[in-house]
Image: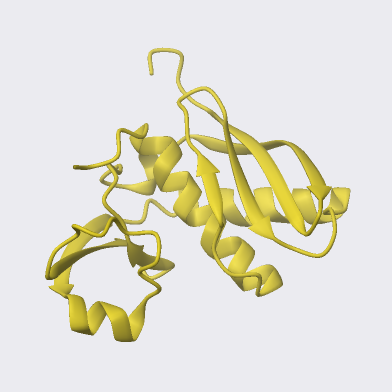
Length: 149
């Protein structure tokens, strides 16, 4: 059963995850709550982010969004997926064929959620706040979208 996430916000979450991995080598999020108006995401981390780092994350995420990258799905065998990805977050009944979501050549990961067809559909990414407690960094973010979205 696919997750009922807002497609633009969920796709932005994937881009944010890859950006955090590339900037801080912290791994993908350990928890996320994705909603249409605002979302939050948690990372195993050792401190809060500086203001400069938050701006840099926003800039990098928005650069990827603005590239109008295609978002596509691919199904691979569970055996192949286990070699290439961490499958811990997938439901146990995910089956023998694992769905991989690719955002251009920027990010690829197993996922059962809904996504946009192109990053141009996401809108502008904005970090609202961050907090740090007990080795957990929480980021709250939103998307600035067209009024009719």
